[in-house]
Length: 376
Image 1 (cartoon, rainbow, N blue to C red):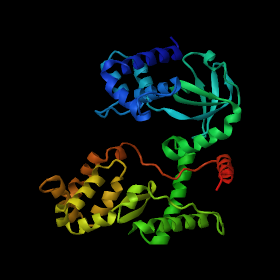
Image 2 (tube, rainbow, N blue to C red; image 1 turned 180 degrees about the horizontal axis):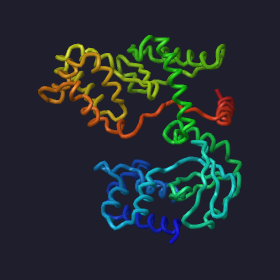
Image 3 (cartoon, rainbow, N blue to C red; image 1 turned 90 degrees about the vertical axis):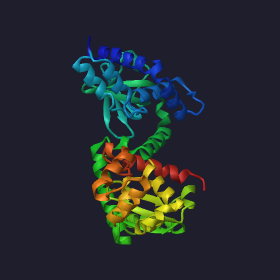
């Protein structure tokens, strides 16, 4: 059995395992999250939802379908186990067909700007309709030194390039992790981040500022103009104003924080929590208690926000969290990191990435052209 046949047989067993009754509830939830009502609008979309569920989604217990398959199939060979573990490294993107090579196609990913030699468990017949210059939206998993198509393919003609460049830009913006598969992109993003941090510190004199909500847009715009002036001195380009989400408008104050690892973050009602950590007795008031609880339990609030509050006065932080959690003897220096890892586990599972996503010259030109075409 060659590697393609082995991969096909293993994937068939894995899919059958994932579609068994033991996962029905969680798979239904996966469809519901992707498509409210539970109905995918095409076979391709349905296969991608299933593929993501099988290879990547964290189940309620914190593990994955692959983890459980490995546990319940101890007789798998070492090669099969390594292949399954490798499949957790999924590449997603919009791919331009650069050519064919024997039973493989050569694909250039517009999202991470890397080239992949891709095979199919259906053999070269799977690529018969594909021509150089066409585009694919698909998912890939490792297969030795090559890559294997995982889930169904969406195929687009060459003249859909502009539409797909826009889609690739949106994918990268909303999921920078996909872009940063390319180490050069990550290095560029971190260099830009370091330069922007210098601008922020020079402009505001600290890593974060706390301002009334009505001042957030003007402060952020001033920072963006300063960044643009550093990158292109004398530029007169328009700086788009920051749109404020509805929940921010309900806050009295907002912290604008330049995290050295990720970039700009906004923390709502941060001034309220500064009052709490300066005067721990305020934890007895419902508003303070609920705001801190939201920070601690909120999946979209970085542990950096809590560190900014607690590290200024660790003793007060110990009192605040001791009362909030009803834990006598709570010490921030001793127990704080464990607390953050418990409530903010996803931030510790893998390195945090920059939110600034560098784009190629071709992508920049495309987006600039698109912007000029947008009616005012």
